[in-house]
Length: 249
Image (cartoon, rainbow, N blue to C red; front, side, top):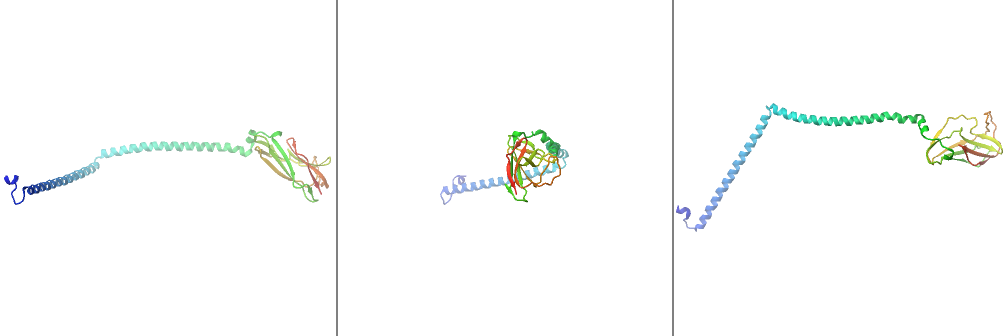
């Protein structure tokens, strides 16, 4: 007992106490490491056994497996029902929209077929809504040159309107002195040409006079206008242009 508490040897007692402490620390460290290793191995075996048991019990446990599947199935069914209802509703809505569009398309296209609804909805141009102008391609024509006139009709009103610009309503009249020489309205039976003019829009048409005289009674005539000075006037809806003077050679 004395050698334990009081080391005996050639070295000082302090050296022996240090050696004993070092040995004790080494023993403690070894024990701690061994304990940690054993615990880790035990915990790994327990975890492996738990996993294996879960997998084994899942296979024969039909009720548990079925219950899980049913829950998932119910959830899937619910999701499917919700998605189906949403998709179905969306598709139905799209179908209704398409059907409505298809159903309304003929109604929208009908006015373009005969233009009657547009004519009924849009007023006809009044005298104050239009302005007319007349131009010629020359002021003097050689013996065999035919005069070419340009007739302009402009909507000077504030709203769109319909105007008939056929020769039945728009007249180009050519006179020489007091004599009536030719008129675009003579012996014509044109179909109505209703033109929709927006404010400021101009309709221009060219007309070539072949120098042949015309007659209001539609008597056949091949009488060619003699050389001389002529005056042309364009009129529409009670409006008339100033006289356009030109010379035939």
